[in-house]
Image (cartoon, rainbow, N blue to C red; front, side, top):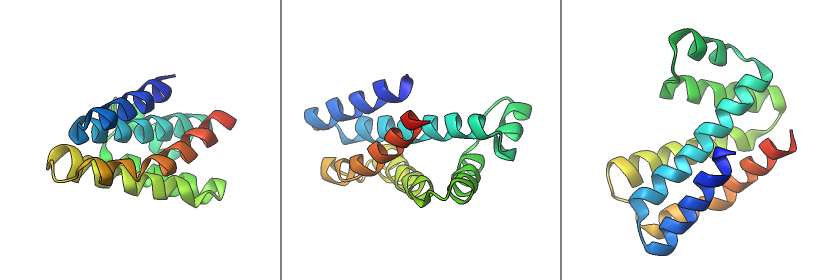
Length: 118
């Protein structure tokens, strides 16, 4: 599974002190989890992404909210919010250090565990 590889890579980048790459890999974990869940539950955002041929950030955000409501799992939307935050401030802006990225790992791992369970 890509999510396993991205999660491992994120931890490797954290160990190396590379917050920028760790941010991007951790974001990818959540993005891929959302895509898996969206496909599994055939939500409207999945259908839109299929029709457009790609996922856009707003569709991922909408999917996170819809899945959280549908599955009664608020941590899905929480993980997305954290992932998007580190994507912007850790990867694009380069303003987060390793500590800011690393503190999000447990929340991402919780989402990964849920995806594995289905």
